[in-house]
Image (cartoon, rainbow, N blue to C red; front, side, top):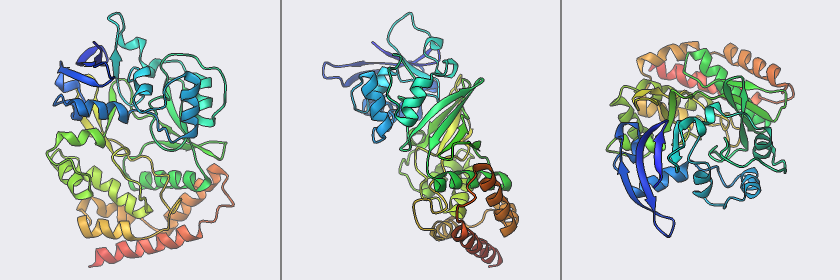
Length: 354
């Protein structure tokens, strides 16, 4: 019978029937489990495991599975990888002799072959066993790389995607918001971000964390109410406000989450703001709709007044110059973005004066 482990502690045990479906769960340590597994719901364990699977719509993901002879479905890659992921310390134990460090991706050596096939689709023979990519979710081609003791996520994108991610990062930092760290690379098709989890701090996506609350529907008002009940509403509103300012239409249950202590399961904080590469019209028209919707729903809480007072065209120009210098995107036309930001500043100042 396999065990779902958190480090070297059993969180739950489960079994499969002859058809490959989970037919039994027994909880051993509820505090260590993700929120959606704490009720021992078999269907939710299936959903949680599948949610950890590499995005099969990515061409390079399918190449990776083919090279490793893994079935192209949403459960086999996760089970092959023993459930391990570079966002937490959960893993599936099959043999009594296994220990966490035998399956700990955080201390695993970096493998360039796995990296190259996941990021670029480079065909080559691959080492067998667990790796960092089979549970690296998301629709853009990406891969983990290790620098010293730190893991960095490398992500492919167009100039517009990379500009949007970097600009939003620097803007959020300038406003004093909690942002995941991003850096440009010499390859103009790539951007990298520092993993903000480690062996002591895990990320639980809102997809799972919402089961800590009675209302599990996903809309901004419900999430706000839930976050307010645990004192994280200010941090959540900061993410929504920045989404409105940079016109990011892509906030969802897998780029919003919380950080937890891996030893206790206790809540630490809201996860930093990350995944903004679809902002600033990277794949859609720039519009004030998201900002106006935010203001209509939440207004401007007192703690956010300082952000609005910091915004200016000079700040936007400074960040634009920094991003273009660091990326080499000197030919990228950002006229529409500046016109949009002028509208943003006018809208926010007008709202303040009402």
